[in-house]
Image (tube, rainbow, N blue to C red; front, side):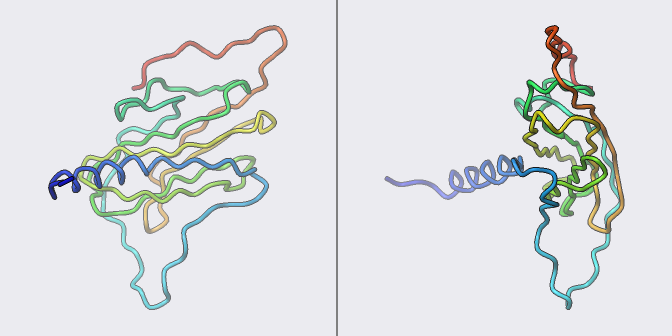
Length: 169
């Protein structure tokens, strides 16, 4: 079977893009997941001016767009995704930093591939991890570009349901 080089290139791009979605089922108490540190002889990172044009929590990303914008989740939902849209930072690395109870539980590094880039990371939630969750977009120099929160609450016996889907903004 003969496969052309352009087809292999496109497949490689597709795999790279979809590999950006992180999924972690570690308990928050185990600490942060971080990428290996840079060697001591490298130059310090300098952030390129850019901005986060959209950042929100969603239950799902479909066709590279969030399907909803959630601020409250009930404990019958065990997965949430942090979606971001970044402009002006091509070639830089951003980090999605997830926090629960004031502790960093996940840091997912994401490469920004163009001047207009969408990236997302996901987190599996244990129904016992109730309370406020925070996710931040952090640039390579450690600066915070965006912060978002959602509340994870117990589903009541009275049949509380998830808020209806509202379109992402």
